[in-house]
Length: 442
Image 1 (cartoon, rainbow, N blue to C red):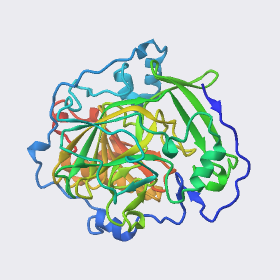
Image 2: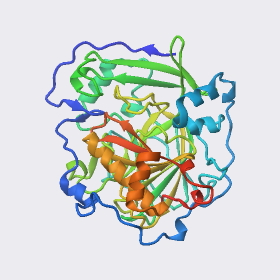
Image 3: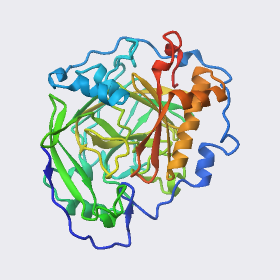
Image 4: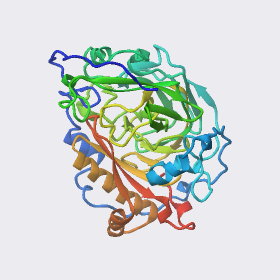
């Protein structure tokens, strides 16, 4: 049940005003130098044919691991709801007993069962840091490609200080006390042996189980966060009790929400100079070519994301657990929570040429783009979608451009993290049963 956490009176103005998901306004967008390093000017606006496709990049079709199934079919109207919202929730609808599904539309496994060693990373003051990807820290551990990492009992925002009943005044004050940082409790870094710049890490989401409560809030307007801070200057926090069996929560009388848990933030060490950083300590707020705070709500159980490696070891950071979010995340936050368990498997792919993250669900491939300017973020996502179709489907650039216009959709991932996000939705159903298994991200 949602609980109103109270509204905060006018906040005093501060020299360190806050924008995006709490980043200080003084932080600049990616410099041209960094943008050039990620996507050189000579390459922009045109696309290259892949010289060849390495046969090892084809997805392995293996049997998905067994999963515990929740009896979501008991939740009346679920299938009808799925039909109403369309392909966006196709993953959850296809397998009613899970938050996500590892089974593709053709019945093939999206990714193999777990293999390798299993490592557990507890949340503690030694493994969790407030609001930053700190690349100056030593690795928590080093894993091998194919290993599984389990994060039990993760922390909520502000190093677990956000708990049911905390008023918006406290949440706003904590942000103001930590300028240049996000609210996220970030776990990491975890290194992958052998990962080098030019490689990509595949993050497979095997298990995502939220805590029994969550919160949604928009900060007082003086902090300049969210999409409409001027229209809602008072701020608000609402707390929710989650039903893990039905995977639902009540927003208000006669209004229920279906849960779709995912990690709002999971990324690697960013490239040199990202957002003008020179000391190796990056705010967790802006997403980028290293992924990070992508807030991509499709990344539920049974999905995966491919992230370019920018630093040796890749170095994985995660936090910002969500029980549910709409595209845009417009008021600043999702249904913010902690996780009883996050379980991911990490696979290293050598020298993929990937320059921006690409996500994959059982039903879609999702090339992504991020930039402070929404139009530029869209352009990056479109160019990456075209590159994907040229390199992985072997279309000509013009045909890839055409197919993006006819068969793909582009969605605004979020608009509140300084770097706005856009993701393309390329349906796997566009491709025949013969061609589909031959298409892989890495």
